[in-house]
Length: 172
Image (cartoon, rainbow, N blue to C red; front, top):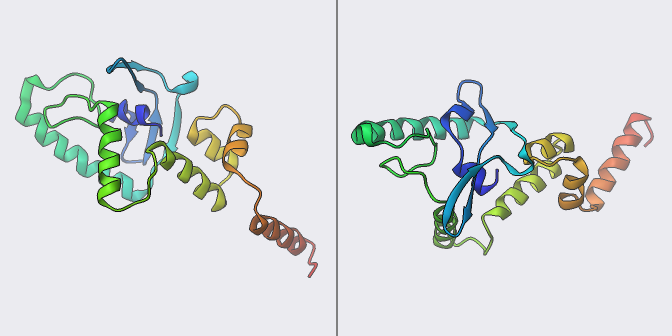
C-alpha cells in the first residue's frame, strides 16, 4: 500500500476473520494539511493479509479500543486504524519520519518508505506470484506497468523457464 492509503485505512476496510483488506481511501498532504480522497487511479482494490499481519492488527485493535475507552466521547469520528492514543489521525509526514527513525536505529540501509512497496513487488514476482495478482494488489491499471517497473530480465528466470518447458516435453 502507499503511505496515504495506509493512513486512510479504516477498520471497516479490514475483515479480520477472512484476512481481507480493501483499499478505498487515501490521505494526501497539501501545504501540511491532510486531504481525504480515493486511492490513486480512483479505484478500490482488495488484498489478502498474511496471518502475522492479521494477528498484529487484532492486537492493535484491542489496544486502540482501550485508548478509545479512556478518551470517551472525545474520540474523533472516522474509525481510522492508525491514530494517536487520543484518536487523532496520524499525519502522513509522521509516518515517513517514524519510518526513517526506526530504519536508522535498526542500522538498515538508506531507503525511502515507498521503496518497501517496490521491494514487496519484486520479492513477490521473483517468488513466482502471478503478475496480474501483483498488479491488482499494487493498484496498477495494467500488468504492463508492473512488468515495466518491477521485472528485469534475469538469467536465473531464463534458465528456470528453459528447464520448465523442457520438463513439459520430457527433454533432458
